[in-house]
Image 1 (cartoon, rainbow, N blue to C red):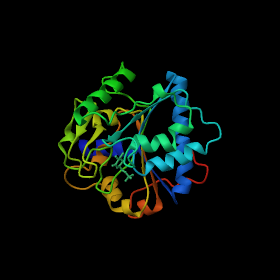
Image 2 (cartoon, protein in one colour):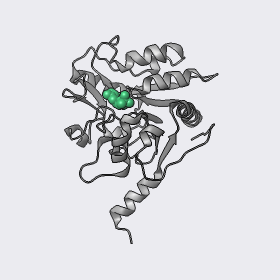
Image 3 (cartoon, protein in one colour):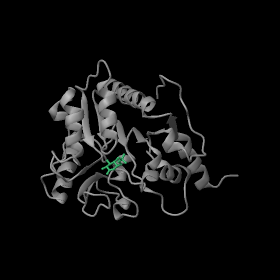
Image 4 (tube, helix red, strand yellow):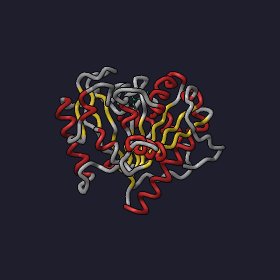
Amino acid sequence: MMSAPELLSSALMAARRIVVFPSSVELGPVLAHLVTSRAEKAITSRGRFTLGLSGGSLVSMLGKELLALPELDCSKWVVGFCDERLVPFDDPESTYGLYKSKLFSKVNIPDSGILTIDSTLSVSECAEDYTHKLKEAFPDDDFPVFDLLLLGMGPDGHTCSLFPDHPLLEETKKIVAPISDSPKPPPQRVTMTFPVVNSARCVAFVSTGGSKAPILKEVLEGREGPAFPAARVVPTNGELFWLVDDPAAASLTIQVERPGSGAKL
Ligand SMILES: O=C1O[C@H](COP(=O)(O)O)[C@@H](O)[C@H](O)[C@H]1O
């Protein structure tokens, strides 16, 4: 018979879908469909679609795949950022700057629908300012409930700007936190906290490339001791997807889904 923690863990695993594609070529369109299908559902139910974006490798893939859709209407989208690096918008490390050039400037998201993180402020003021913007955008929620959060994972298992063994992993009250000692440059960042990430209606990790294989195995198949940040993403009432390619999934031994072409999630 399974113990209570084992039962809980197996229930959580059941809610998690690990979907493996041969490469980003097949993964990309399914990601775009996940975004538009959750957008349609959210707009039908609540009149708007709230999307949280991550930086890194996701930016180019998302820009390319969304722009390839024939009739993308983002007029009812509200877009926030899962984290941001405190650098000028024209710095190649700026997540906002990259999305602006690769996506925002080419689609019809209203300016008022982009919850920009003001990187000209000090890191603590910046976190306060973004907290204020999120509270205004989600007045009814203790922790903002995004319709969809798109996350990446670094080779150390970090997600958002939540890094292994950092005190921010234990944050339970703030919705946004400043970080001044990020082990991955640039050192100053702001990040959503786990209570926000785990409040989302749907969370999708996108992880591609062989460099992610060792950490993906650790995160998805478990290890003794404190869980990696990415492994702590377990939405309380939401869906959790891991969209990965074959090189990233190379070391996995757990059961995964391998959808055929034209798959929809
Ligand atoms: O620093 C960051 O890294 C993670 C992972 O990026 P990836 O390039 O390895 O996919 C990203 O999700 C996060 O937004 C970013 O600030």
